[in-house]
Length: 224
Image (tube, rainbow, N blue to C red):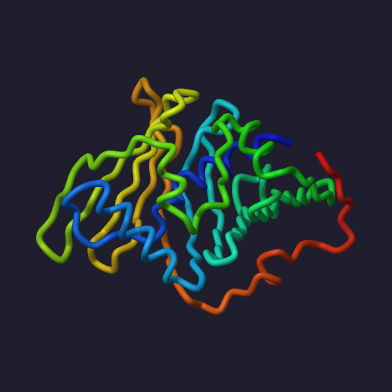
């Protein structure tokens, strides 16, 4: 049951930079502007696709992420790998609801318990809408800035302050449209654990809380 949570927690760490900043004078400036832009968005949605190491082997990853920042709610729906296809994760401030397609069950876990179990030290991974709060738990630095003005690409790297993981999350942000284009998770040994591209990025597309929370009504509820 826990593997989908592990992966969605990683995605949430990546998701803290859903809406990028303006200037790149400092990481603090970037985080502040990311936070302001996210709070201004009524809703955010995008597709993540690429590959990630799950169960010690590289697998295809394909999912959609939808979020309503003001409500601190996020929905992740998997298309790949096969083991997670049609699984859905709905997270809010208080709990994580995982719909498991093969068993037609919805497991309900408190947000803190789910984050602790995933090894992120209490990370509230619904915080797609509060970058400043979430990133306060991480050491973040600007690795590089490339490209000409108006088309610059910023590469940021985040590491947990708690030391409970040495993995690094890298987010690439384009100045053209101010949005993320790529997310990487890299181990301390330099091994790629995930390499995901961001596409179909949209804001203010009319998402509703009821729509994001919707799960099959006939599913068995299992509380953890």
